[in-house]
Structures are given as C-alpha cells and as structure tokens.
Image (cartoon, rainbow, N blue to C red; front, side):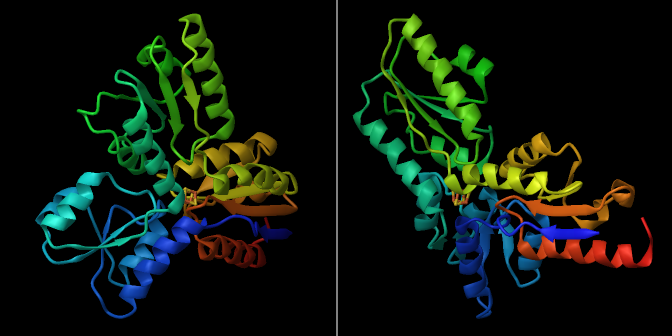
Length: 297
Ligand code: SF4
C-alpha cells in the first residue's frame, strides 16, 4: 500500500503566523487569550490550549482588563480595537495581511462611493472574517452593506439599479465568485446600470490549491481529506478533491477512519485544508501504517 501526505496541504502563511505569535508568548509563560478559535481545527486548538492558550468570545473580551489578547488571521471589526483600548488590553494582532488589505479596500470604497451605493460581500453569514469585513462599513456611512451567500440570495437582496462594489470573503471558491460577478453585472445592465465594480479578493493560498489538490487526488485510489468541520476552506477543497476522485473521505481525526474504505485500495493520499496542521496529516499516515501492519485490509 502506497500512503502519501500531500506536501502542498497544511497551514497557509496567515495561520502559521498567528500560531507562531501565540507560541512566542506562551513559551515564555505569558498568559494569552485568543478571540475565537485560533484556527478552524479542533486538534490544533487543543494542542495550543494545553500550552496555556485560552479561547474567549467577545462577551469575555468586554469583561477582561489589562490582558494580552491575540487577534487571529480572520481579523476583527473596529469595535474590537475600541474595546481593547478602553479595557487596557494589549492586542497581538495576527490578522492576515491579505484580510487587512481587503478591509482597507472596503474602507476606501466607503470613503469614495456615492451615497446609496452598495457594498456587496459574498461570504458565509456569521463567519468571523465576514463580521470583520462588514464591520468596516459604518451604519451611518450612506453606503448600504449587503451580504450574499450565492446567486439566488444576490438576486433577492441587491438593488441592481444602484452602484455595486463587489467583494468576497477570501476563502470562497474563485469559480463561484466569478460566476456571481458575471450574474450581477448582467442583472445591473438590465437595469441600465454599468456601475458594478468587481474586486477579486479571493486568497491565492486557497485558490491555487485547487489545481494542486486535484493533481494530488487523482493519483490515489482513496483520498483522506483531513480538516476541521468548521473550516470553510476545508469544505471547498474537499469538494475539489472529490470532484476528481469520488473515493475521497472527509475526516477530522483518525477516529473517523473506517478501514473498510481501504479494502480494495492500493494507494491512499492524505491531504487537507489551509487550517489543517501537518502533524495531524502525519498522524493519519502513521495510524494507517500501524493498522495495515496489524490487520490485512
Ligand atoms: S487563507 Fe489566505 S487570507 Fe486566509 S489566513 Fe490564510 S493566507 Fe490569509
């Protein structure tokens, strides 16, 4: 049985940086709170918790005073920085530079767009990055903010007669986003509106993996895709791998492996999302090698 871990899977640089920042302080015995899960992977969160990291929500942030709080790669809305200032909280800001750039571009549009314009964000409701992006548009800015989850939602929520500035959460599928952009432009033209500004804000750390993960997934009889259940990027990349290899299984840990999947397989590929730690994929490989040595499947 050939078992390989995809060398192109694993943390993106945004997540690597956030975790390195947390560990830098934790390794010195300094108490660090993190606002939300540092990465959408329970196993990695557990590992960092065992080093002393405490995950908190915004309610807890409001109650903290004089503490050290890490902002993860997804970024935060301006209110979070305001609370930190008021509560003497020291922030370790590990917002990913790509997300920060996107937040800046949204703020620029808010400054320059005519009153009544719409900033449309394609993203997942409640996703922390999306909350951070929407937070860049003040309610009294004169610019409307519209969150859309897809084409049908866009058709219902957008006023196509008014200027539209389209952005996307960084981890959405590039193909779907471009299709959405085309649809919005077409609808706007039907309303005599040519003021549609499409901004490609998809992170290439994610979209470039599309091609690589397809190449990888094709090479194996079975693919085990390892990711946390909350990972948006995990869902996208899993579907990508499955589109070229129907024998692709989503797992979050070794406990979820069903050895019957491997009964007729001669090769297994192990890959994952930008939030999947390499050690977890390696653990899956070690587990399979151990199991295959003990049982014959
Ligand atoms: S996926 Fe891209 S935008 Fe998101 S944290 Fe990683 S590098 Fe940054």
